[in-house]
Length: 457
Image 1 (cartoon, rainbow, N blue to C red):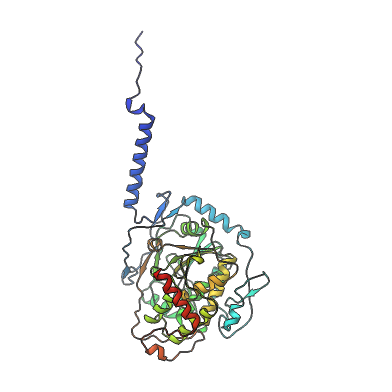
Image 2: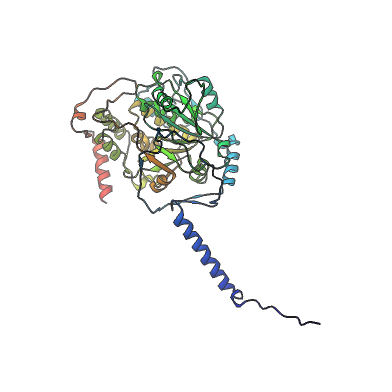
């Protein structure tokens, strides 16, 4: 009979405290390594091995879709975004999209015919709809003229019943760029629509991105929708705000949407973004803070100074109208809203009462004054009832979920200002005087005094 030899547990494993310490050390090292090799410290995925599709489209070299990227230099993030497991997100978004009660009550819209797409209502008439006190009210929200697209495109838009990602290029102002990092199931629940005009379409023909004899167009994930824009507004920028702010009407069965300016390329799966920035925050809408401005008047002054809109008299009238009707500079009294100025190049929405009402009211302001949407943003947000539940995320996050490129066309000199009704305004005295706002109304003077007092306090 042989000896039975007892095996001793190595001393290293006899101490539970030592084992836990070693496990903690390795976990910490792994997380530090992951964050160091990750492209950003603002985005953290709980499952980095989510299935990511390979590129779905390759452009001819002549198109130059990756030319002129604007680099950023931020290396820290005060408010990181955490993404849940991709599979769990897909399931949760799908369940929400099939539960129509989660998006009730539905907003009712004013019907009829008008000379302009939005009706171009007088100022006080527009303001009368800000207090949505009962579900019987019919809110003006565009479509008082037909939105001129083909029947096949209209059917496709009405068939999108989950998440829709929308962009637009008018006047051949940008390139079509493909989103990066799409999960394996994203295209099942997500539609991608790019609205263009005839000038942009001709450019796509020239680069042979689409065949000229096709009834429907597609470039990578994007379904290309030609808008017969000559039937809408003379100003291409005003035509662009139709899909930007009336996406819930163009896609009446969609439940969530992402608007992305065509100068941006999406770098994160849209389902992850909707879930992290909208669903998990229980908000109506998510939008980035502006990188520099906090007060609406700062943006208005910059708009005049840099000739982003050259009708200075019109800008002055807009700001004085808002001041007289209660526009205030941002203070902590406005919390949880953390700023009055967004970067509206990326907008994520849940298509419920709050975001739909806000989008309709702001679109009416854009038609009433000009398509510079940052100028009316805080006024509509602060005055509307019920209040908008809004996630204004950090600039660092915006710069990591998209890449920004320069526009195709660089305007030089004075740009003609085109009124929302289609007329061209003449140069004004203020326009010739170096593009400065001259605000004489006492309520705007009070705004400026309070704004300057806050900035120096």
